[in-house]
Length: 308
Image 1 (cartoon, rainbow, N blue to C red):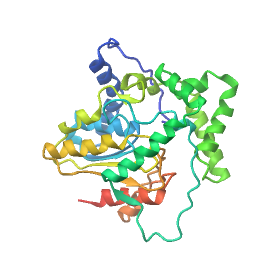
Image 2: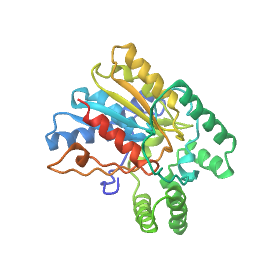
Image 3: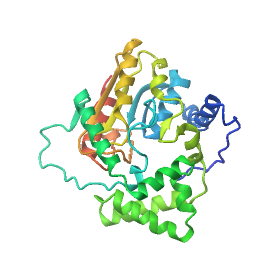
Image 4: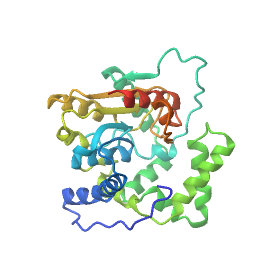
């Protein structure tokens, strides 16, 4: 995203042709990924996607199933049917809680998803929605009107850096001052740059941030031997019911490789940094920085990727 070419994004499909609009918006991303794969000479790959990136990872696997070995979907968007149980405004208005790492890691904070854990998550989401502030209502209104967060900030002209500063300091409060400054500079540069793929949002997601063509209704078409892993934070604003239902639908068509995990002390937001080394173990090959609970997510990613 930070160094992308900002290719102009346009949709030729008519507004009332939902399937054509979604297919065209998805192709904008997944066809360029296929071009990259081809140029890199990769026969198959594991796709790890976060939020809308997880949505496009599934869309890619549906279109190019022979090119994907495994899907790992971190807090995926666009999975369940109907409106998202929480409002997308939480991405902007939530504050990252102070969550110091425990001195010992004897008890894992990675849990297989159960109905009880999902119910607990939904109860918290319900309470958050009751406390929705005026700013959240405004953000939700703008989202439903087709505005992206980037457009909102760009339209404020010289107020943009101040708004971004408030966001980065609130959302990434556990970082050091130097890291916070770096994060602020990064977010400001990608936000104030020319718009591109952000304009796909209103074509992919309907008001309320739920998919026009939910993944839960399409995921059964994936190859029956493809492992699919859903991962949610226990304070996530993405509805985990969609992930649980997707695992059921995979099993119903004979794919027993679907599973779902819940990470303690983690919300929706994550940043991932992957570094490759030509020598060394897989643990050296993959390193993920997940700002809410990086240790647990890193452990889970390594475990999933090491599995044969």
